[in-house]
Length: 180
Image 1: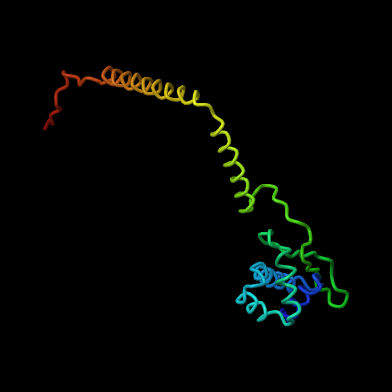
Image 2 (image 1 turned 180 degrees about the vertical axis):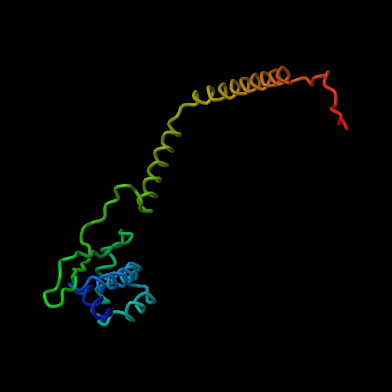
């Protein structure tokens, strides 16, 4: 039953079914679309898809249309929209549809988007390093020398403070003796 539903979903790109079946169909359809993203030339992926999908026409559509359509999307190829209850038995109905909107990465969670952003930053940093004059290198050396001098002064001050703060043992205390 699920194989027929997934085949129909991939063919028509939208089906109406009960909530429970919709959740199961979504799981199977997402797995198949991920196989479709592997490309038309991947024979192993095509054979795995044929095990589930009953129509060779739909398998061809999966690898030629749907796979490239969702190539940049990291997941979430389907959407479930609840539409109400069925009149006869009151079962909760949903529409399972393939997502058609392009993906947007608002908070840069996607790996490719992060890598592209990092590459841009590296390119900008590379340009800044190449454009930097040699005169900027000398103040850095001066700062290092000054930082070492400040650290030496702080170490000397800590040693002096440790000598002053050491408490002396009182000499008038005698060991206590037990009385019988």
